[in-house]
Amino acid sequence: MASVLALGRHPEYQEAIYREVAEGDLLEVAEASKTLQRIFVESIRLFSASIVIPRRAATDLVCRGKDPQGNVVFERRFKRNEILAPSPPFAGRDPSRFEDADKFQPQRFPEIPKVLDWIPFGDGPHTCPGQWLAKSEILIFTTLLIRRYRFSSLPVQEPRQHAYMTIKLAEETSLLLTKR
Ligand code: HEM
Image (cartoon, rainbow, N blue to C red; front, top):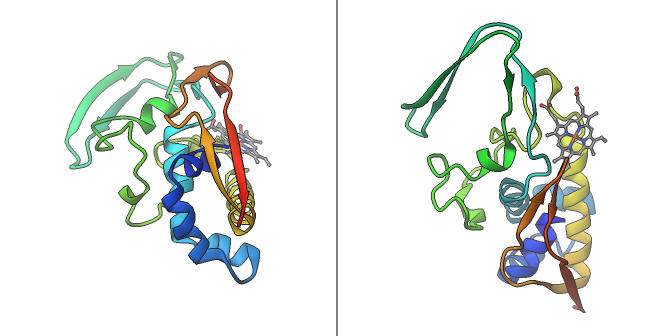
């Protein structure tokens, strides 16, 4: 799981999260932990599960991409029935959108976004209906782990990724747990 592996490589965030979740109702503290939420958001930016979310244009359309200042940085016209292939991992690492896009920097999100617009869960009428369940499961699992253990993950550098139908890590990763 991307959040846990990232935390294993950045133990300083484990302690920050521990201070926020050490006591209290599991679900409440997990959902309220700002550090944990930032880790989730930053991890899914760098490690999206889908390589591509294909769409067929239902009508002729113009797609425009804008930089954070709102300037149009590209424009492309599509004919009806053309296939579009938006890619969550490329959107998540777009350098015109994210400074030092390949770096793990959870503090880049001063506010926790309610909807992740770099499309790890897609968008529109078919956006992933399980995204809030998935997020809750990840927050709860990570909270349980951090309450009981300190951990480190291998390899220490960011693992490479391979794209199949979904994206998988290209190498074996492991977690070393030490009881608190
Ligand atoms: C981290 C975990 C997950 C990720 C990254 C993820 C990602 C996605 C993505 C990218 C799509 C395509 C959205 C689109 O076409 O715009 C999708 C669709 C879908 N997901 Fe998820 N998902 C996750 C977890 C879940 C869970 C836990 C459930 C169910 C409990 C779920 C159920 C679905 C369903 C039913 C669709 C099809 C929606 C439709 O076509 O209308 N997903 N998901």
